[in-house]
Image (cartoon, rainbow, N blue to C red; front, side):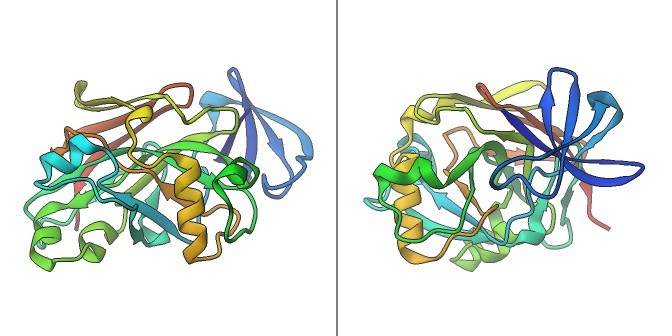
Length: 254
């Protein structure tokens, strides 16, 4: 099932995408779904970020080849950092390049996990019990500021630096999905989630040992090798098998 968050002239709603239509649901997508009876042609709605999380927890250097291209080895344990909720945007929205502050902004395509209920200290064996589904993500990063600061908050935290979408796929198996990132149609990243050093169940266990996870919280699982710079005017597309594609254009920040 694909759960979308969308807007029409009448406001914002959640809904279930069924082929070329969206069936609206009442309230939120956590728990049993109640359909309102309203249906909208998919081309007539604007897809938004599928969720507005209270927090985005991301994992650094979780593909060995990416750790190597960044000049180091993959860490023995998951490396956690966070992105603010204000960084989240949806499909088709613009990533704004902060040219006054950064000269190098990179794409990082990722599989994202969306938490479905409040939880903490979840064993890996029960991780699927607390997951609502999965979506595509782009962990946009000001690479020069990441190197300059020695920690990642500023580099990862700009407004618009966390595109999510196009929807939440509840039935995907995250163990071995193709993931790719293309810039202006040219594939720059091409990998499989089976190459993750720490898989989704391990990440849910690890993160939930540190903090309580709330419905809608997002875990970014890490990016594969092939990261690179974006320029104003570029269109970047992250595609995850059995989920969909997330496209965003880069514009200059005012």
